[in-house]
Length: 249
Image 1 (cartoon, rainbow, N blue to C red):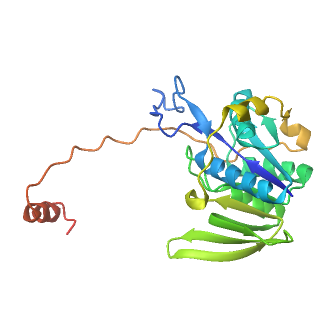
Image 2: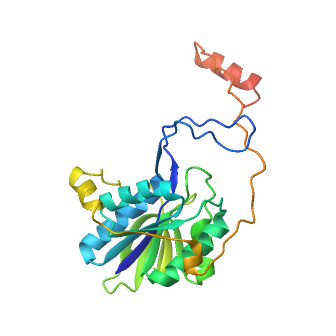
Image 3: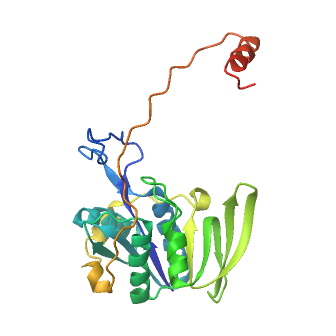
């Protein structure tokens, strides 16, 4: 069973983000980058499935050569091989989905397992768009994943505002991982050494027969306004009075 796991290079969650003075984007000077946390969860689940059932885990990303660092991290976690779709273009979710659809057609995986969203733009669109382009089923926000013995379908527990929803999706499909699906393993030193010998293929979008371009463009970035300092209250009655003054109650 082959599983395709797209990952994204994003600023580390603990990094302080600064907006450039001209509002053209974030200032990446001194920023540490990492694998998108939801994608790391998806990769961990794919590796567990391969360890239990056999097969191959292919990790892929779209971006410049600097993204090879995150692919090597995925290989060190346990992925079998990596594919870098090398482009310096700024791509929206639809353009990303088109490239992934072309990669799907080349790799022919049993299914795609990816994070529900990236923590940099929080679009939460690529997985759904990919399923639509391929004409396959999808299960999003998955916190528990169980495959049937014959690998023909997956029983997915989805996180919703109303609680846990259980759906069965026929494979091939696109499945997106939520936070509670698992806890990704730490990268070990032996894993890092093994990753150096694993294949990392670099291709261009044109090699996949796709010329994806963005339809959505960011006009300007602005940092959120600073929050006002809070105040301490001595009693519950004082707290209620303050909430009434703020017209919360």
